[in-house]
Length: 440
Ligand code: ASP
Ligand code: MG
Image 1 (cartoon, helix red, strand yellow):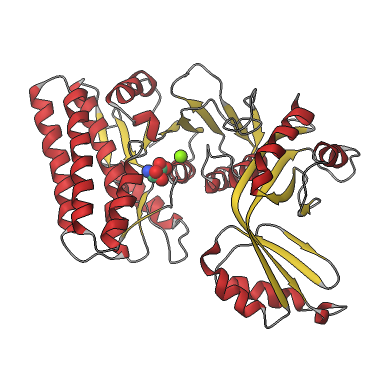
Image 2 (cartoon, protein in one colour; image 1 turned 180 degrees about the horizontal axis):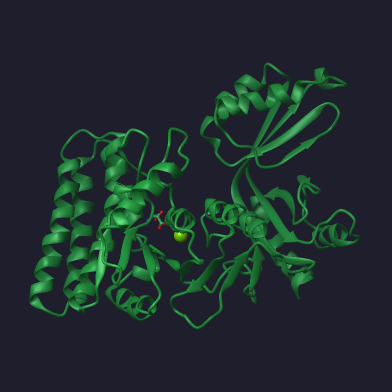
């Protein structure tokens, strides 16, 4: 049961029959591996839209969207397979998945059914690729993620369960076959279908890789690794060749879309390198994430939108202790994580990225003092060498941004990052200024 690597391919890497065929040379080397696949790009979004329509009671709208999606998959099947026999099995397989979808759509809709709807994307992409390999006489084994992947009551991976069940499932397959499994989907503590949140296929790969102690976890996407700034907004960005686990976690968390932020953690704990690769340019080195860090004043900048800042002001805070505890307890009660924090003697400002319980939180906080909320904020995270004994790195950043209003600054919390809060309206300008002054 020695697996060398995990190879996870994202939605665009399985986004068309052509892309699926392009996987073959990548996965048919001699190394024993597990291949984790996302849904075809666009599918999970369509399934979310279908669920939203069902929630709002618009069953006809949902059925229409289901039929449009079915058409799309029929086209994929017709283009993907070469022989009539395989087209026939492909269509039967797709129709059975759409049968489940229409079945769910014709009944009253619950959160639980939404999870089952979302799971169809990965179930179909893996079945399509598995069948493609069979048609080409390449030995593969379809490993059902719902038989081993599980989260506990807090939504955290249940490693004990996963290890036992994954190893049991793997004993069923021939050691020569390529093992294909679904990213993203899992069961919850009650055995119901669930998922690891949007973008969670990366997380699947690192959970499996950690359980099996593989040599490397590879995340294949359509971009050649982490860039030093956001290529959607800034020109001439560069790929970062090496990052430490901590640096990668900060970048992933603070907005670099390439990696699901939870991915780094299991790999870090087990010290398993994570390599980001590009399926369009497989020769590119990509980004290698390991325990070691390379020195550079500034490595990368990432931005995270959708932030709300909450400012609490209270004279009771003056020279008092226990005040912050009371504040934090309120956020804890609503299971809302805090990202940045700044304090003065009589006030504290906090940011959150999940506004779901914001109103309730504000109401409870008002018991402690006056509360002010501002939405549409962005956190800019600069990853680099910010050891406090060093001189000069923070002033350079502030000089670069002297035409942008900085609304919060977090420095000294970590040796490898500095975060700033700005209005989202200033984001592109700030990213461009940082690119010009830090990386030019
Ligand atoms: N298909 C899921 C999503 O679109 C999971 C993933 O692609 O990582 O969010
Ligand atoms: Mg992704």
